[in-house]
Length: 211
Image (cartoon, rainbow, N blue to C red; front, side, top):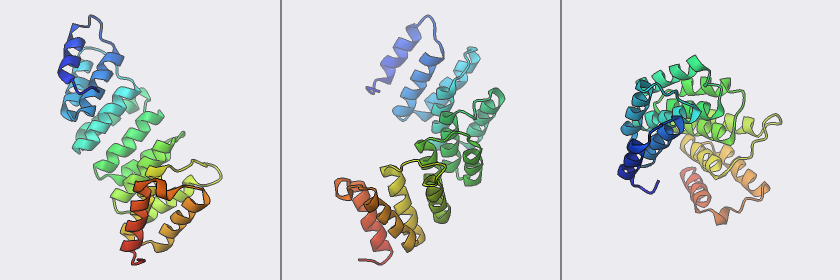
C-alpha cells in the first residue's frame, strides 16, 4: 500500500512459509496498485502451491475480475466459492454482486443479492450502484425503499445517496429524486458539508429542468 510492489514481492519471496494470509496480502497489494492481472496470476499460482483460498482471497480477485471485465474468470471463481460454501459469506457475496454488475450481468448480480441471508450496507450499495450503471433507475429506487423498510433499516451513507440521485437524474424520476432530497433533510444530513451530495443534487435538478 506504500506503492512499493517490488519490495513486497522480495519480502514475500524470502518467506519460508507462505500461508493464505500472506498470499492474499500480496494480491491485495497488486489490486491496490492497479495490477489486476498480477493478482489473478498469483491466485492461480497459490492454487498450484496447494494453498486454499479464504473469503478475502476470493473477494480480492472478484474485484479484479470486475474491473477487468473478466466475466469468464469471475465465473470460475464463483464456481470455486460454490464448491466450498463461501458464497454465503457477506464479503464474497458483495464482491460477486459487484463483479457481475461491472461485467454487465445485472440479473446474475440480483440473483446473488437476493440469495444473501446477511447483507451489509456494502451489499445494498453494490446492488444499487449496479442498477444505476445498468440504467435500471426504477429498480435502484425500489431497492433503496426496501433498504429503508421495517425489516432492514440499514442507514444509507453518502455513496448510497449519490447513487440514488444519479439514478433519478438519468432516468428522469423527478418525484423519486425529490424524495431522496426530502430524506436528506429529514435525516439531518448536512448537504452543504458534502461537495459530492451538493453536486449530485445540483446535477439532478438541472437534468430534470428544475433550475
